[in-house]
Image (cartoon, rainbow, N blue to C red; front, side):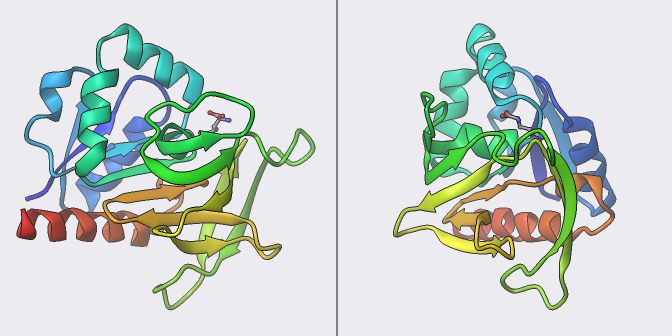
Length: 193
Ligand code: GLN
């Protein structure tokens, strides 16, 4: 069974843990560095990226996290994607591991939350995606594969090797395909490790 950590400093980690349990993985809420030791992968949930980063630094988890995400499968959703990004428009980066540029709260106050159907690479039918004060992925580096865009072309899901970033919240809908996709990434790395 895959043991998948969910960073549990702030945000909607409980929802991710519930989905992981539902699809047959063993979730672990991560609050201490020792808990990273034997994980097959990690989810950094949505919430407030500045808060998650601040609490991680204050609790001594930031540096161990940085080492973990450098080579182990990690999926950042919304705030989690912001934490992974090498570049954040107008702000300093946090874990700075994934070759993407993100802009926070990219949809403005009028439409700060919405849901829409996305075409995701490799999925046969559209995926319902919930956006909550979401970032946008402005640009990606050469090694990053774009997995989904909004109809206007803005990037909202991308993968760079062992790193997955989504601007929306797959833990808030009943579609389990992205969680299953991430488990496949973790399984593959476990096989080759
Ligand atoms: N607006 C948040 C941030 O900038 C992200 C929102 C979310 O995770 N739903 O960190």
